[in-house]
Length: 181
Image: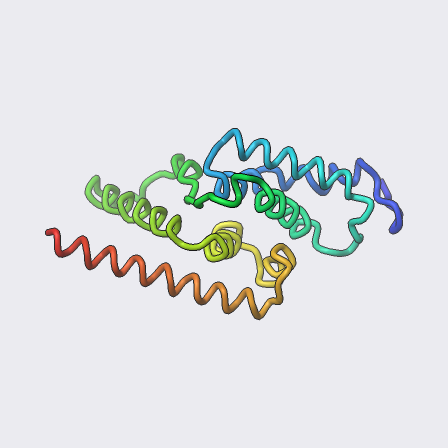
């Protein structure tokens, strides 16, 4: 179906929006840490996006536009004002261990993942979301800039500071864990 530049159709919205559903839901789960709230947030995002689809400018980044709607909906919700973010470990449950993996190495790897997840949840929201968008969602700096409505230079500096803060917190935890041994 061909869409005119001045008036996008509902079917073109479906074509663009439906492939993003799983990614948006994963992002919502990160933000809310609750399945039901994530489902509500994604539903609200799609409702707002469909209503505002006429204002979407063809040729711009639809993915970033959808993420921005989700993020803004989250931040304006009561949950967004007090939430913490955790890594979604469900997506890794189906992964098969490497052939040379031992039960001990698998246990240590799981412990490391859990420590990183717990540490990420201690970071301020603006650091957690930038790490999520870059490292998990694999967005480019430009896509992140469009999603968060900040300059690309700010994305790079915030990502640098987020990684540095995460590294510092992890080092503190590792030093604290060694003292207890």
